[in-house]
Length: 595
Image: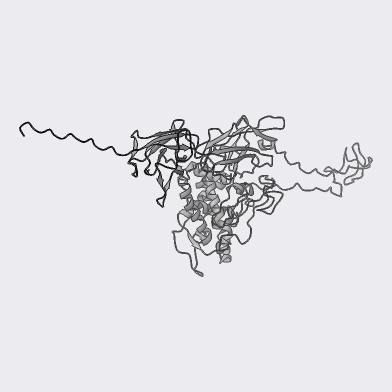
């Protein structure tokens, strides 16, 4: 079946060329305006390479601007239909609309998870399918096993700066088998340096494998949904696609395939999908990959003068050994011409990233926040040359590591920010999770192996500095009875509601003795036994803490209930146990005078 698709696609090449002209014209009218170029990346001839204005992450693309398949979809999209049966002729449009079953399942599952994890992103599975087709031909026509892992590794060319971006090895060859330079890996063509932070486990096997279509599709979905992008908005959609591969032609191509799949697609058996036939590094409409200058050898025979002799020739017509005023070889004839020198490749000016010698902290103060709160201090890192001069427009990647659930605003653990004109990259605000303790944020230059700058941040437990009863009703009880009112307090911290704060309630011996009392009021545990200390309490979303019902034994007197919280808030609540007072006896009526 795969061979059948391949023959059919080759026969349709002429049709594709016609379709390309029409669709390209349509795409050009819809393309966003270019806002900037990456100087260390090749651009497509006749089209601008766009970086949306204000998008600090646009340059940190997923693929390292690796080559991609340039085949355009047919002009006519098929209506959704069942998968063609074996032996049944299919139109080219129907064939190209077919997506291998496992690959299609991975796209749909990734989009479904993103609808839950990031509902504001509005990621369509057709966008993942479009990128998967352009990057790898849907994992080489669905050449995957039952778990979604490619049967053989899909690799892009090494990114050695020879026609592509220059990305020295970042994974010691772990993903791409190349310990010199990075290569794009897997069905969604992630470079190792991007996969290191963007990778996801999409099939629940406990691994993040760029060669697995479930993992790669989910990673691509999260990658496209970062920066709070809403992909139902055209501007955000374009920014997301350009951040995947920074090329105007790439953007137009992905948009066309996405629209094509939206108009109709169906599942085909794994391994039976067709593979596109044209790549951006081979297509004549794109910039050719630079070749090494040819080695030119001198002609062993001297060249004949055009005029057959004369002042510089000194001999008869055709005589190359005659003397002359400027004759060579000891004046015995025309000099042997020197071999032409190889062309000198133009010197590429250094990029801002090339100028960076080191990073240093830009005045970041102590990073501390309570669980669930936003950090008020932000991390600032400055990129500098060897002599300490700041460097602007350098991409700095901030990565959170450690046993914590802290994130940057937006829920990501990695953020890439370009340095400003003072050379400073200001990381997004940190958001503390519920886990307390220390975690680390590392700042590193994207595309370089320079030593990074580490920052330690601390998440402390939620705290309260004040407790107060919500009622002033006295709490009283008779011996052996139960208190009619339950104790309720409100916790605050610096005047604000202190929610989720841990608390302890203990019936203490006295105001000066915090040991647990052995008599007087008590709580009951699940078995109905008396307990006088409660731990594991926590205030609710409104900062309220309502204690269980209190009971009294036969001891009378005044007792203290002490409530304490993380952060040092303490409140003593008075409890009274007293026998009920009997009603006074009324005097007997005196006998009437008439009786």
